[in-house]
Length: 164
Image 1 (cartoon, one colour):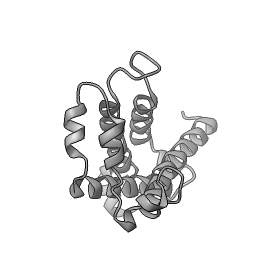
Image 2: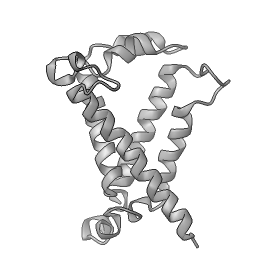
Image 3: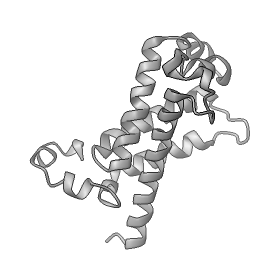
């Protein structure tokens, strides 16, 4: 049986990860000056992925990720992914889909920064966050501090459990 402490930690983890993705989306859209300068905002024509894909990647897949820099399709997929993951995890609905999408995004970022990170032989925050996303997908984390309890009672979710 899951303890209330475990449920609280799971809910806080889900909310935290959701807000990280939502904030990244908002900052990249409007260029609030945190990770994205105002002149590089997506709304003024900046690319939310070019800087990272050109200058932030290293390791065996550098050429592949560099080739994606400047692609409008990559920018749109990335931004829609940030928004979808952020909203689903923050609200506690579609958590499985959002968490799996987040796991894929973290896995790709892990490959982009190199399989041998700068400060450890193989573990970095992308590696750890990948497993956090899997835990959020595999446990009913949307039920804690979110709308998941109500969402999971709907006929649609009862029929298609992947929508939890």
